[in-house]
Image (cartoon, rainbow, N blue to C red; front, side, top):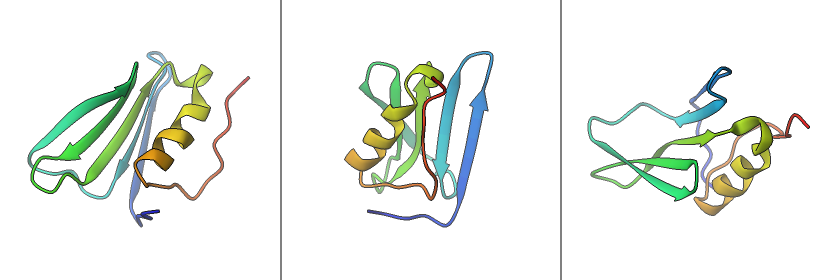
Length: 83
């Protein structure tokens, strides 16, 4: 698993959207929807994962962990749903 030293975690409570960014943003990026409501942003030149975003996060928190595992990323924290 790739482990980054820099994380930026943003949560929009009204929109129930969580985004976890890894490292510094790139000048050119693209996003792909890896499953409905789950987006992975990658550097256009290196294909490095720059962030993961999840819509309706409160009811789908466990999804973040599985998506991160699938793209070989990790976070130094436990992820639990609010249920």
